[in-house]
Length: 432
Image (cartoon, rainbow, N blue to C red; front, top):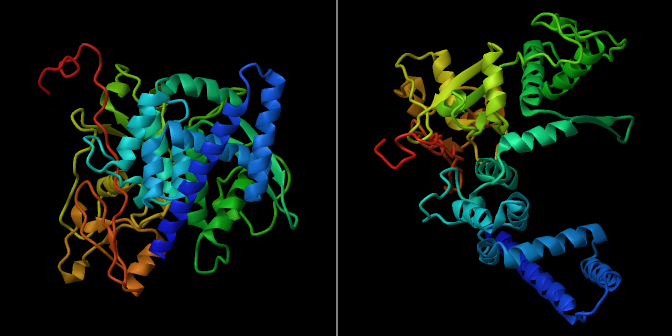
């Protein structure tokens, strides 16, 4: 299966090279005097040809040609890795998406970070080919937010104007309701629905956590809040009522500050307002420093402030020796792992369970290096199959060994040293 996956990657590289060569040839065949209309017609014909050859839509063919050109001209390292079978076509597409707008130097730096293990600033979170596409997109997006030539503050100010709710009908009497919101509001809504749904779980509750989340959201919007979680029934609720603000009176048109349990990691200089370096919102990724400062200034008690070390970007270790974990240790696990440590799992930390890697009964200690936070599914896998976690450290979550003996590394946090303010000793090249 591994060799078949490498063959698929090599085939994708050949298609991309061929598409880029074909498109370049078509453009070269146009006379220099060709009009804009003639060039547009030639482009349409070229896209139509690729669509017919590959039996795909013209929209998909157009995107494929753009990505093939990017790989051939702007991302040579990615194309080489694809040709070697070191990453999949999905990974290559993500690199095309996340390098858009970075410029040649930024694109090359992102490629180096995720594709070159010998680079000085190579990713500590795993290289691109060792991550599932969804996890790689999250990591590449985080890197892009940190290194984009336009500050995240500027981009956020522009994008927040596009906030909206969308409704899409679906089959079998169902529909999708989605919202494009500022990250702090969206994360808080998700954590609130998760916490409320978990409080409703019991041996006699037939609904799954996923169903309970959906019922919680519907009840909150249509049933007048969730001050009495037990009142959320398994039946559809009706009647639109005003959602009360649990934090006090609400000004018309103002969104109340989030109240759910969310972890936000803030570089110390950003918190002080000396730099605009992004903070990190648990389960989401980078957010503008102004958003993080606002969360803390507004006294959202469920947001836990974590100041990072100015030298390397990592927090300090917290530990203890008794069986039970302290609240501080649980928060540290969330910082270290950010999600379930099983390779490719997206279940982020609020839903996970702290677990001793070496059981307490077998001599295991309650220290950060002997703790993981697998989701319920992979916690069950550990105890009821031959899959076993490998040792962790204070900054690295455990990897996993499969029943066939293959070892899979877990995804590590990709901490980076923070940006020092202008005029500081470190930014001037002096000692730390």
